[in-house]
Image (cartoon, rainbow, N blue to C red):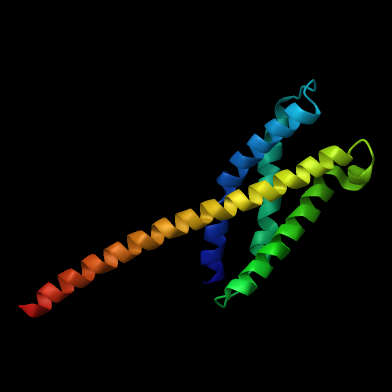
Length: 150
């Protein structure tokens, strides 16, 4: 896969990530800080977090087709990079303070869940595309064989 194709693939997941981040923010907010109210500027944070989340996905790229083991290792490195970057961006040095530790753990868990869901959604979208391409190829082959038989 070329980098251009990889870029398009990652960018197509941006709004899936934004949607899942919105859901995670709601759940974490209701659990850890249900009384806090925010202004409209908070609506930008899912967009920013999703953009930051795309960076490791774009940086960890291979031109070669990876084996299953290599792909799993690549995904684990991507997840680790996401956790470090997003926790660092979201909490900074306060992530390990005793009062923020439960929220940091919840945040890290939500990053993991979002990462897994995004990969499942990407796999389902790729599977649907593969089925469509195979169907189109079969149709093309049947029309081609009909034309050559005449």
